[in-house]
Amino acid sequence: EVQLVESGGGLVQPGGSVRLSCAASGFTFDDCAMNWVRQAPGKGLEWVSAISWNGDRIHYAESFKGRFTISRDNARNILYLQMNELKSEDTAVYYCAADMLPFRQPVATGTSVYDGWGQGTQVAVSS
Image (cartoon, rainbow, N blue to C red):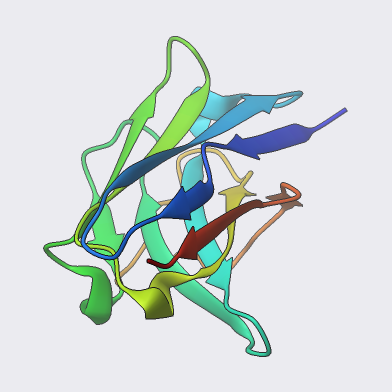
């Protein structure tokens, strides 16, 4: 079965950094675009970033450009999100999501198709 397992969240100080991981299995990870999406307390889902199957196309929501970096290790079936200069408003549950149509390229607003979701990892930014 398809599994996406996020990890790496926790309590982080403002201005700090954290790297999230998403371990994928049950589908051909290296054929598929991937996304990070988050949900802050009391708010809706917010798309963060997307990366193409081979990593050569990357997009971010405007508010995250320069602070967050998405990457992937296809040999290990892992998606990453490096988050720097964290702010209290970055407090959220962070999810990874896959577009499972092989080789479909993401655009500047993500893939728009999220065929699989993980359970998320909580990031709390606080002093």
